[in-house]
Each structure stands twice: as C-alpha cells, then as structure tokens.
Image (tube, rainbow, N blue to C red; front, side, top):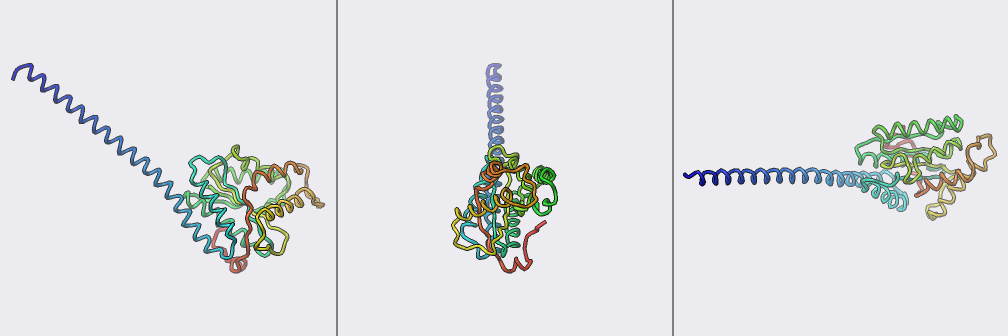
Length: 269
C-alpha cells in the first residue's frame, strides 16, 4: 500500500470514528432529554391525577354538599396544581352554621390533605380558639411562626380554623401569606373556616349573598363588637384589605350526620 493510500485510509477511519462518536453523543443527549422531560411531564400528570382521584373520594365522604362547593374548589385547586409557577397561593373560605360545626373543620382538613397528598407533602391546622387568649401581636407572631415553619418544611397546605375567633389585629399577618403576587409562599393552599352564628344555612343561598353574609359577620366580630376585645390594630380599612386578599372563593358547608357525631376521617390536629 502506498503512503498516500495509507494516509487516506487513516483519515477515513478517524472521520468515521468521529462521526460515530458524535452520533453516540447525540443519541445520549436525546435519551437524557427525553427521560428528563418525560419524567417532568409524567410527574405533572401524576400530581393532577392523584388530586383528582383523592378529590372524588373526598366527595364521597361528604354527601349532600352543594355542587358549587365541589366544582369551584376543585377547579381552583386543579388550576393551581397545573401551574409550575403560580402567581399566588390557592385560598378558599369555607363557612357553615352551628349545625355543621364539626363538618366544617373536617371538610377543610380533607381539602388541605387532598391538595397536599397530590404533592407528596403534608398539611397543618391552626385552631383560632387556641390563639384567642393572646393579644393581637402575640397571636399574629404565633400564626406567622406556625405557617412559615410549616411551609419551609414539608407542609404545602394549611387550615386556619375559626378565623372569627382570632384577636382582630392578628389577621393582619394574612397580608404576608395572601397578598396575591406578593405572598411569601405561592405554591401552597390555604383553607380558612368561619363558623356563623346562624343555627343553619339555606341550601339555595346564592354565593354572592353568602359572601356578603360572611363579610358582615366578620365586620361585626372585629369592628363593631362591643366586647373588650382589642381593636387598636384593626379598623374597617385594614379588615377590608385582608378580606380582599382571602375572599376569592367563599363556599358553604352543610352538616353530615356521622361527622357531627364525631366520625371525621381526617386528622384534625
């Protein structure tokens, strides 16, 4: 073989080897991208599917609730879970009359668990009456510490139970957690419960009327009350600001007999 032919052969081998190497790298990169993107898409679908499955079970646990409750809460949480970078937390107010006191907390806990379970995380419950003995500043600090430490760990949902029992000024901490795009944590769900003084709710009450009823009740509790509760840190304008940030969705809860008897399937602590 001539020197010219030998060099030409070496060149062909090197070029061929380089082509094979480039092809192997391209295939490897392609497989990695497919696996990575496929995993991301699969995880996203999986979270939504888990939520939808758990949400169906939740409906079975709470018969005789309004269709508005399921349609609107389900839509809000589904849309929130479907966003990789949500603009704000998902916030829902559940309200009930005295005949559904236990169902109210149980259903709120169920919603929080369903949302958190879809994200392989946990949820927490803050009981308003446990903070009622403190002054505004102390209660506000307690709520802030519970929510921030929870959301910094494994909690992705929280229930703030009996909002109406909190010291008035403590509600101002909700600016931090519910101030739309400025909220400290956006990939979370917050469920608030408000127990009205009414003995029962009419099932056919329109949602705008229900929202107005709840709003008037809170104003009565926090602004117009003649009790010795402190109102130094709360006035109508401040309460209006809090209300505008948490009242995206106000939904009624009706009693479930077995739950009112103490048989809630969810952890209430």
